[in-house]
Length: 68
Picture (tube, rainbow, N blue to C red):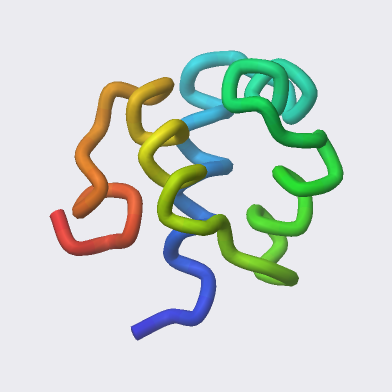
């Protein structure tokens, strides 16, 4: 399993929706730096942030973490 599945899913879904990191951050109550760290595999989002991200992109948690 790749190490940055969540980060890659965040980035690909964000770009597919023509959304900037700042826009996604505003929607979930995070900083754009946090989004960058997640997308680049520096950190991973906590479960609550994963729920928010999945809701924004209208995908399941399984899809976000690479299980779907």
